[in-house]
Amino acid sequence: MSRSNEYLKEVSEIASKVDRASIDKAISILYDAWKNDAQVFTIGNGGSASTSTHFACDLNKWVSDTAERKFRAFSLVDNIPLVSALTNDNGWGDIYYEQLRNFFRKGDVVVAISVHGGSGSDKAGPWSQNLLKAVKYAKDNGGRVIGLAGFDGGVLKTASDACVVVPADSTPHVEGMHLVLTHLMCEQLREMISSPNKSSKQAGY
Image (cartoon, rainbow, N blue to C red; front, side, top):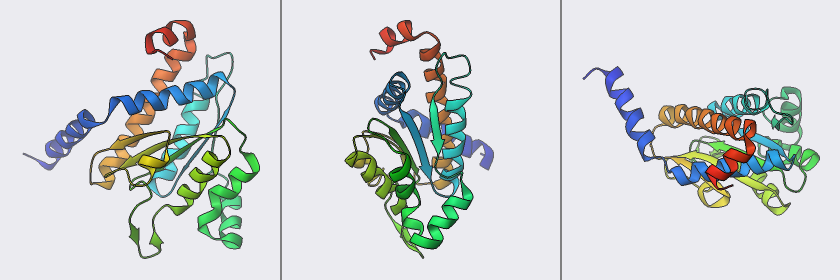
């Protein structure tokens, strides 16, 4: 079997093992945010930072472009001068927490995206502690948290109201599947928002 075929076979096997109930719960939280005009803040580091930006874009544009009321989604990755200023003054660990202190309101949602779910470490120390600090702030201030993780889910698995774990010990597979999952959520949300009465009854929301 060529590596291409092997890789795609692995993708298929991983997709089949993702917990569907956790996906539905994450969609429900996002749908409630839209209904209640709450803000959605997305956060991530490295490749997950680009997924954070992509997800916020899709919620605002693709999901909402035919809706009477739009999603209000913001990626806290995107303001590079602010992120660099916060890093310079306070350190990398506070870049999302400090922004939430300014923007977050009770009922808002944080979507934290992390391959290892805030567990493990490398040369700079423990991974994704800036995400976990932001998640704690959201929970302590009346918000809800959606996690997208991989491997065993890490800290995010228990710290989130809904955590979709990609059951793979491979960063490329986890990051790739996170994009698939955000597109899946957006497609479902778009349908629910365009036909809210029908979709609510079908999904039980």
